[in-house]
Image 1 (cartoon, one colour):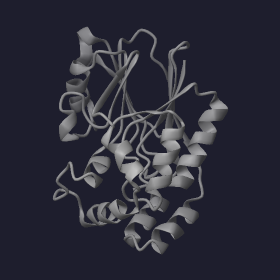
Image 2 (cartoon, helix red, strand yellow):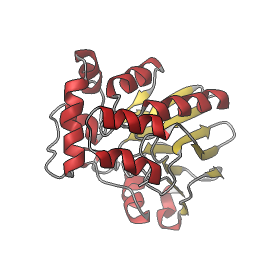
Image 3 (tube, one colour):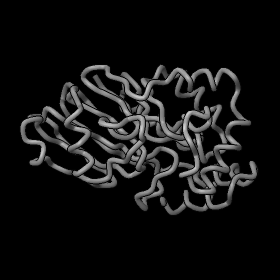
Length: 246
């Protein structure tokens, strides 16, 4: 099976369309999305529609939860809160119904999908180092687990009986064989708002037959989405950061 993994999209249609096209050329049999379809970007409804029409396996992200009033946004920065308030007014009832139906964790062997950490999915914690990875891996009961949230790509490969001997891959792009590892945790970065100083859209690709996991990048029309952000009246910083990958 060839799995295309979509990281945080955040209402960025230009990035999403480019990534989906790349994954279709890669021959993806199944699409997985790790949450945060909405937030920050100017086309949240269209992104929900695209993810739904792909038949994607999807979990709930913190920005998705926030627009449903399921999450206190007091810890969000002012720009993220402004985007959440704006996004609520853009979504149709069918969009809200779709988001309400998303679970925190999806287990579909051989993989699990969760936005933040496996050990406390409802807290939307970050996996940003081997410390957090070990905690999640201890609760992981499938060979593969796909996460998002940090917008920074990384792969943690280990065996359940020796988690502290894990192999860590933290590259903007990577192709790794996971043969011989029974626990693999992959953060594929972000489709719509990368934060690893590489503004290209990030996505993941896994071939379970060949046991190969990839983090790939693709350029998209950043200027077009920046214009839409400004035209929508969203904070200018949300447009500017896309060019910098921060």
